[in-house]
Length: 122
Image 1 (tube, helix red, strand yellow):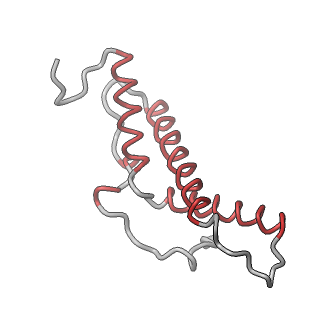
Image 2 (cartoon, one colour):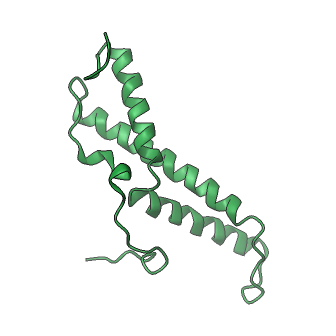
């Protein structure tokens, strides 16, 4: 079993019920499992991109460690590190952004297909 290399840097916490990944739910009626998976993948990808941008901005003014020399190399690797942080955070439930995006994508797809979501007014 491979261990997550970023585990020591990111505490293992279970996502709160409100941020539980929606991927564990069954697809709604009228949406194929393949479409549902694509919606989930798009939502998680968006959340990871958003978190990456947030991490980049949070650390934009962080001073460069003189031990590693700084320069373009450190900027490149720092960028890659934040990219991995964002993917891991999003994969672990993130901040609930993916869930909100998924619901909106699902709503737009249901609307485009003429499907009335459960509980929606006709």
